[in-house]
Amino acid sequence: MTAPMFAVGHDDPAARGQMTGDIVDALRAALGASAVVTSGSDLEGYLDRHDQGRGGVICAVRPRSSDEVSRVLGECHRRGIKVIAQGGRTGLAGGAFPSAGDRVVLLSLERMRAVRAVDPIGNFMVVEAGCPLAVAREAARSAGRTLGLDHGAAGTSQIGGNLATNAGGNNVIRYGMARDQVLAVEAVLADGAMVGDLRALRKSNAGYDLKSLLIGSEGTLAVVTAATLKLWPAPVATATVFLGVPSAAAVLDLLALARSIVGEQITAFELMSRSAVAFAAGCADEPTIAGIDAPYCALIECEATSRFTDLAAAVDALLSEAMEQAIVVDGTVAASEAQRAAMWRIREGIPNAFLETPVPFVKTDTAVPVSAVGTFVAEIERRVHEVPDADAPIFFGHVGDGNIHVNFVPRDPARCERFRAAMPAAYRMVEDIALALGGTVSAEHGIGQTKREALERMKSGRELALMRAVRAAFDPAAILNPDKILFSASRDPAGPRGHTAREN
Image (cartoon, rainbow, N blue to C red; front, side):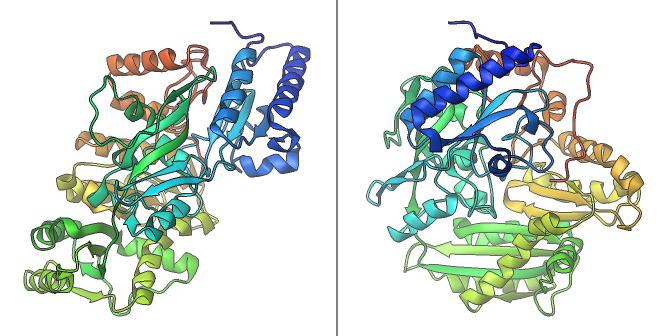
């Protein structure tokens, strides 16, 4: 393989300037001037407001096709220039942004938005990587089908980014993670070679399943340019309930009861602590459901895809038995689409409130085995004193897959110095509790930059070595998404690792 013309991060400013001008000219020649963004003000939209690597961005390039992605990567590979693929930039682990000291080209898939095909007979759709998740879901809905992946950032996040991080979301309990939605992917390797195909096969044992390796790799192995996604029958009936529950342990009892009565028709089962609902209401002036004030709330949504299923009767039976067993202390059933939307605004208002709050906060993404959710919540509550000046823990998340987000905000917004200083230790505490219960340090947002140290505590040395070997096999020149998931060998191993004070 041809060696890079210049090493990224070269000490000679003249060499860096030559490299920068050369790649910008080459990309403009290959894709057209409008596809390459270089001015500071225009680049702002591609950068994180907390980003410390913005000074190293050479340009943002916006290809319109897989062939153009191939040209971009080929030009960068020949020059040894690092590339970071970007989707909707809604991730919370810094995976789509440069690290300080890197000279990079940002590869935005925003122009590759097409829904190439929807097949209601084969139950699949073919979409390009830059297609927003909400657009893909609407295309499926128009064909009488459902795309199983859904989450709060659906309007902004893109299919490629969802696959890159193996996104989760609200419907994992029924449809699984992003990886479970994929039949095939088309991707471009670091040197510009295209791999994969978009065959809509549900059965194929033809060697290694490379698509599953690419999904969740956060753009470190290849750039996914299109995917064939599974579709499901669209619901003909929906039932949504908002319930007050006395404890986190009782929420698990409610989940078990719901599964025994409603079965696989449960599409979402969300947990919210009283503190979470109050936090969202305070930040966004969003009222709670009238009359429901319990230590925890559960939002349950069920869908039937057959007109012969009596979903209403099943949900009524669930509520009756849950009240009789004192698992639920109060609740309401959505009687209209407006009421259903109001219930979901409360749930989605919690993460949105963190975007509005002016105070520092800790926002985590761990998961534990479902049966350990109650123990996990109790242990966090027991150890909250370890986070100085923190208010009551804010819990919300997906009970059906054990992904409960733990969050902390300062008790007094005017005096949060001690809280801010303790933020890294707070992340570590939550992750350690999750790991001790057989959980993970990252449930659905990836590793990115902020969880590399946590990954090293979770994985064995042999596992990390295998991950490095896989990465080197796909990208020997190490140009794709540098310093993500694994620490770069060029970084000082004694340097700071783990969470920063990024308030995302």
